[in-house]
Amino acid sequence: MKRYKVMKEGYLNFTKRPRRNRSSKVWRSLVQETDLCPHHFVAPFFVVDGKKKKEKIEAMPGVFRYSIDCLLKELESYISLNISSILLFCCIDKEKKDPLGSEATRRGNLLQRAISAIKKEYPDLLVMADIALDPFTSHGHDGLVEKGKILNDPTVEKLAKMSLLCAEAGVDIVAPSDMMDGRVGFIRKSLDKATFSHVGILSYSAKYASSFYGPFREALSSTPSFGDKKSYQMNVGNLKEALLEAALDEEEGADLLLVKPALTNLDIISKISAASFLPVGAYQVSGEYSSIMAAAQNGWIDEKKALYETLLCIKRAGASFIITYAAKEVAQMI
Ligand code: PBG
Image (cartoon, rainbow, N blue to C red; front, side, top):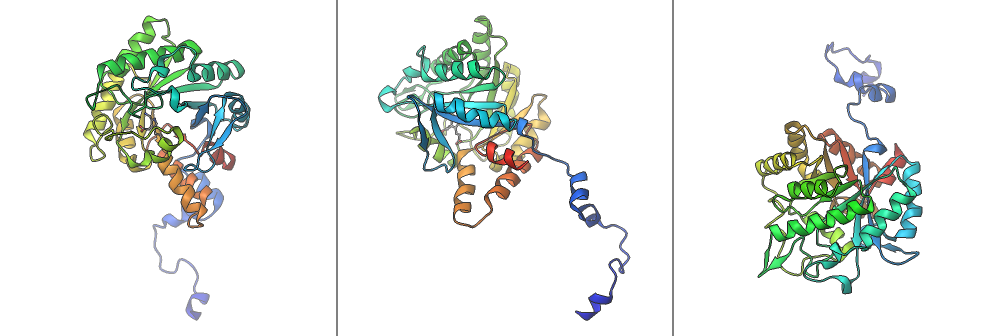
């Protein structure tokens, strides 16, 4: 013990000391390679019908279902934090769900109303809409079902209709999250034919059949009533397949690509962003978010530090933008 007190640092004469670049806060900041900015966040929102509603979602602490009026109010705080992109999901009543997901393509539905109300109040906000049938189908699958099988092409036609309704309402970007084959190209053609060539497509290119979507399905009451989503969402063991999906989406006309979940797929984010000229985003999904929140509520980890760290690492892996339920909380920190 005593010996160290009299010793001066550096007596072993190492020439290489990487710790020098970590020796003070300013020095560390100077050499920090990755940063988080609020304008790279996309905040997801769950919309419900009605007025003055702000409903807690048990499985997602700090996340709510908003009626349109309350959402408009809530958005003020996001905009003041420079979060200017949002992604909308609709949460519709059970009585409105049917096997065909008819509500998804009904003119005047909740999604259309939400988009137009938001764009009217905040024209500069970049509004994205999730395109898939699962919030609208009684069986909870993303597509139409026949004899227990998920149909591809009839689903794609329906998704294109859904996209057109969103475009009519003024959406900036449609985000197909269903993983059907050929949907990006078909949606692109349908939008272009209807003079919506300005509407972009964010394709969930590599969406894995993950166990981390549980809290989201609780939020939307959309847990599949039979089977799982493995015949359309990707096998978590595969990397080449993700590169193929990304290449096809790029070829079919996607403007932005997405990987999800994020934290279990950092390698996929990094490889797709190296392989594609398009911006690649990542979705920190409900299960990733809620695991952190649950551990924090138990006092096992520091919520803010853990959220910040995961988002920073997702960015470091190569994500240009991040969809995250923690957008506001982390934006307040940076
Ligand atoms: C719907 C959809 C899901 C998510 C985004 N879009 C659920 C699913 O595929 O079952 C999950 C998002 C999250 O968990 O936060 N197609």
